[in-house]
Amino acid sequence: MKYSVVLHKDPQSDYSVTVPDLPGCFSAGSTIEEALSMAKEAIECHIEGMFLDGELIPKLFPFEEHQANPKYSDGIWGIVEIDISQLSSKSKRVNITLPEYLLNTVDNYAKKHGETRSGLLAHAVTEYISSHQ
Image (tube, rainbow, N blue to C red):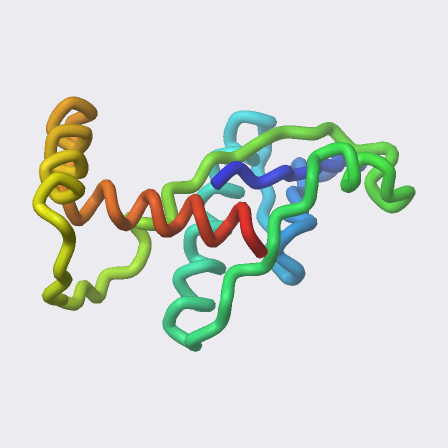
């Protein structure tokens, strides 16, 4: 998932980072690079907390929609990419039934892209949910 972030820099302060799609998710850093790195960590922690609380991840809004918000008008924009399928530390084994051709298709695609079956399905579900909220 790609999160829009906005950085602000006041004189005599570090860069502050706001994540418009995750209310209450903030970070900071002394350089833009550090601020973006810290934002990635903050987003991952925020989402992990939401998972643990059983909350749904909020819908992502288009970058341009956030840019139109006056409270972000003087900020520097960036994108932070998060692989939420890697965040939840709890895994649960499940048994599913698929037609053999579909399972072969999944396995072949996963192998071709350096994934496991479980990793590929987790990514697919994550992308599907984020695009249909």
